[in-house]
Amino acid sequence: MWNGDELDLDAYLTRIGLGAGGPEEDGTGGGAGAGSRPGVGELRPDLETLYAVHRAHTASIVFESLDVLLGRPVALDVKGLEDKLVHDRRGGYCYEQNSLLAAALERIGFEVSARGARNRTRGDSLLAVTHAVLVVTVDGEPWLCDAGFGYQGPREPVPLARPGREIRQGAWTFRVREEEDGILVLSALRAGAWRDLYAFSPQRYHPVDYVVLNHYSSTHPLSSFVGRILVQLPGDAVRQTLVGSELTRLYPDGRTERENVAPEELIGVLDREFGLRLSDRDAAELVRIHRSGD
Image (cartoon, rainbow, N blue to C red; front, side, top):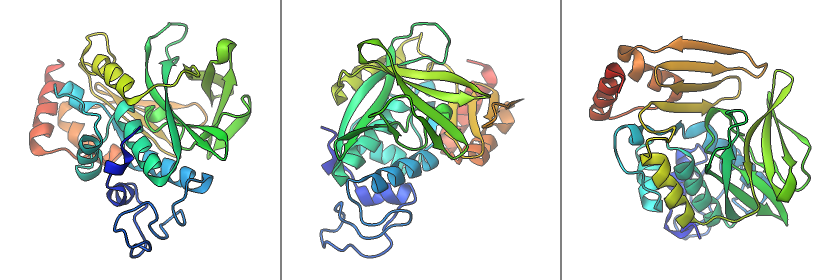
């Protein structure tokens, strides 16, 4: 389904900080049976591995849609994702992030399926299905996995088997509740109040569906990704988002801090706050766009 056999798993694991701690034990030179790794033992399709990979991915690969702003097509094939997010150490948005995560999990041996979600962070507005999420089944139990919702999303898998439970992830709290027709809603606790993040149905999506959604998100003039800088990172102590020229920091108690980022500060902010380094050519073009306000 996700062409996980095409992924250089060792390169991906090194990118997210779970590189092999020693030589390959299975003699295949890059298979999913690589030996012990920091934060996880032998890679198996179990919860320990799922938690370790999900958490490491969200900590290491920043959410960003800069290629959309730079007018470039967003590729979703495994090799294209590997080149950009792994070897070039760039980030990506939901279709890229979760397609890469799905390929890695499939390669390890997990059962991975996809869903399409509606963003609910804009109040009562009914938005189209434009967010990609994953459902991973472990020992018969479904888990929501999402490395692509930016600074508001979960850092770790969220159980789906018994909706309503509060799930603590460090200083942050999430829950999934069920609505009519089997709709599941992921919410986050902020300053004592639950806020919906997104809702998704039981309908399975496939990679080809993400190709269509990706085309809309990367090209349509009404897409929130078109025409503006958007970079996000879900940290443990603070979560950060740069939208246009405004950098916002969100804390677990609900506090927010905002500051304006001038054009001459932009590249430094991307490096210092998000660990994102661009080529000289891309950096210059991004500063030009930022300065012009286009």
